[in-house]
Length: 78
Ligand SMILES: [Zn+2]
Image (cartoon, rainbow, N blue to C red; front, side, top):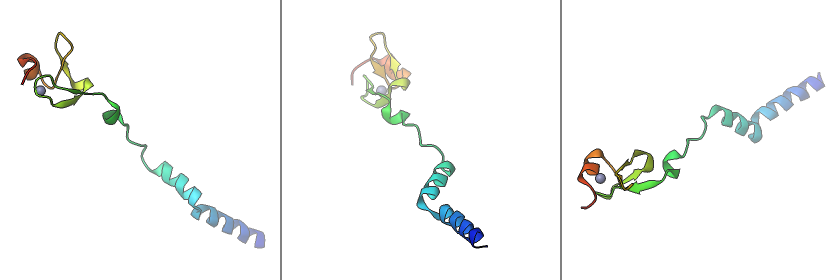
């Protein structure tokens, strides 16, 4: 009987211990957000100087980035 109580106490202690809570919390929480937005290279529109991610840039023949097709058509300058 005493051994059983010790076992139950051990299980309760383990269940409430910070290490186990941390482990359970980690499993319950969704994985960390990907940092694509922060790590992606930011470019500046050659026409209006708006910052945009490199993957969304419209490039002209010389490789200058533009925020939109309209500014790509307008060309560099302010
Ligand atoms: Zn622009």
